[in-house]
Length: 268
Ligand code: NAD
Image 1 (cartoon, protein in one colour):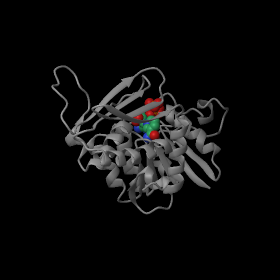
Image 2: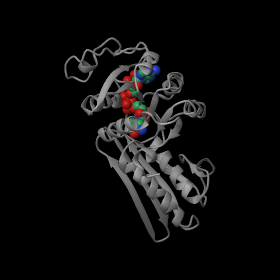
Image 3: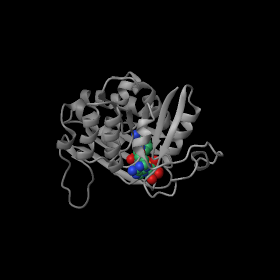
Image 4: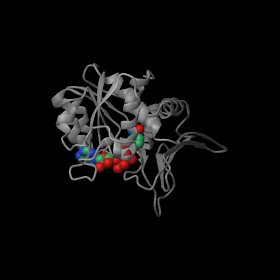
């Protein structure tokens, strides 16, 4: 049995992940943690999911969970992910990170952990979006930047706290790679007021928030006289949870390194 732990187990994604591990062949849920002082601490994990007692109590001791697991999945917060990365390295536990909005030093913590254990880090764990990353990179490489402007539009539910979404930035990175440039040299993360005309070669972002939208992304290649639009709509968080559990199975026993979903899915 492969033992999988879930940090942030009471969150929107955390609950999905717990259910996915419980349903997975050959998988054992090694436990779940929550934010210290959080309401879920001390409660039974099954009761949080509304499915009766499982006999697994939500704890606050992440080190113990990493030590008891073959892989740990993290959909929490950027600050928590940076701490969890250190614990993954210390215990040499495979670590799957879906958390988005990481600052440069928090990303550095993941890279550091990846020198000691297998880390799968992906802003979006769905098969569809990872295929979209590849297609966008290919299209951006084929379409002349002087003719085609790239704009990325995303919409998420009202609770999301980072913007643009990690997936939108991932799509931007894929487009920039296709054009052979660095995203942070060309990105326009938002526009407001007297912005002046659009600079050729920029990659623009637009962010919408509202309702219960799980995740919509669209990449627009706009030229004079035509537009090409390619996108993805997630209607259930289950696609992310299934991808993360697949990544956790894949990462167990891998050599240390920083991996992406395209490695897990064989799209690399
Ligand atoms: P959420 O707020 O519902 O859940 C986060 C949970 O983490 C909360 O329950 C919170 O209490 C817990 N948490 C915070 N700090 C913790 C700590 N130190 N230890 C343990 N638990 C801690 O948010 P969500 O909608 O589930 O999203 C979580 C993250 O996952 C966000 O960054 C989101 O953007 C990202 N996300 C990624 C994907 C993907 O496919 N990669 C998909 C959906 C969401």
